[in-house]
Image (cartoon, rainbow, N blue to C red):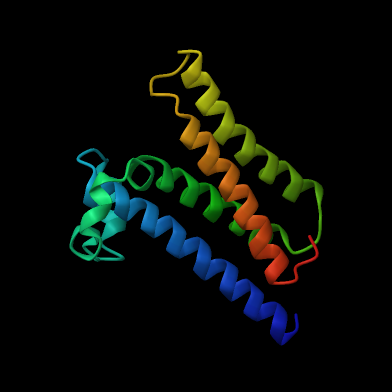
Amino acid sequence: MDFWGMIKKFILGLLALLSLLLGVNIYTDFRSMGTKAFYQINDFIPIDLQEWLPGMVESEFFLYNLPDLLWMYAFLLMIPLIWGFKFSKEMIFWASSVVFLGFGFELLQYWDLVPGTFDWMDMTGLTMALFISYLTFFVLKMNL
């Protein structure tokens, strides 16, 4: 792999890791719920977001929708790192899986088939994650 290819991998990995950690941090710093695993992951990035972003507590999008967006974005960025930068059956399978799981889970909540609250803003956030990941690939000139 050439130097630019290694830089692309590093950037994708860093963006994915930061997105995942920020999503976890939102759960642990602003919401009272969360599993012990979230708090253990939060030890990797011990930033008190409530201190840095005090006004965000009032933002429902920040509290409830942004973590879903960040997790979908992180997952979509990791797919080319795992399966390579060329279209393959595996890449298409995993990208489709995360999209169907994200949107599917919201729809199952809408139909009251799984616990949780359906939210159109979650659907909007997931759509934004798809768009932002595509934009990231475009900016990095990745021919996926």
